[in-house]
Length: 299
View 1 (cartoon, rainbow, N blue to C red):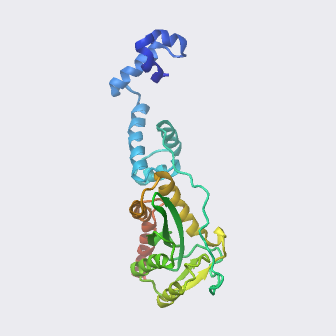
View 2 (cartoon, rainbow, N blue to C red):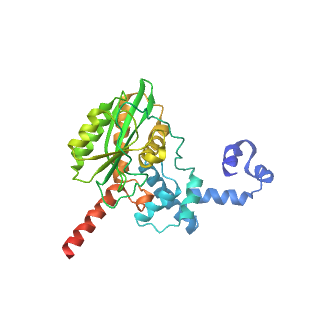
View 3 (cartoon, rainbow, N blue to C red):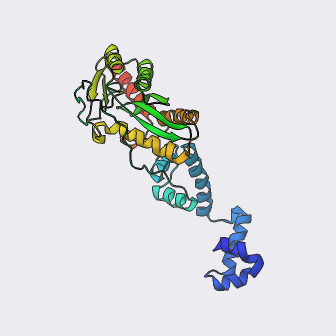
């Protein structure tokens, strides 16, 4: 109503409009006075204005994908004494809302001619330590120059992305590049299991040989069953919802590659993940190693 009066007051006048609308002229003028002098606002209005600025900052700093719950958790982590319902109310007033994941797209193309390892994970993606289980998958992105493919390797302990690659073609080499990055970055020891679906890229001779060279045990789920590779499917879904669907259309390969780089850095180091305690993956791993060090010193 205030906006309507502001828009039409020059043509009709404030009092005539207020006679039609369920609002007193004094209420409108009181609103104008508080706009001109914020010190006249109530304590709640002043605090709401301060919180709105912080909520908007958190929302923008996190790719504009956080909903009420994650904005609230991030603000609590930063020391703000704020109720979740307050965040919900203010985000609604500001027109801010998080992204919602859509339907996943099937990219798996099985190669029945290739020998297939057993499923050693059996849908159990919780592990007690890093570098015990990696899961891999890839997805595609439509651009003005054609399809672009994005592969991820994820450590199941804290859901940290340890390897990724963007490619113009879905050949076996690009998923191998993502694996190479993960191996080089993490230098895993013995006992690591690598789980994927039955896509031909992951069953290729070069990929299988590289797993063997690194001492990584292969594990493969079934065809077209998202539950058998649910963790990797979840990361793919977040990537599509938080980057691809929200920021498209995409012009080129380079645009997708740079956006993926930005998102992976944010995802690993700043994004709050509820399954690991609403903290970022890097923090979860750091907490694990800090606890190990404390136990070693105590012993």
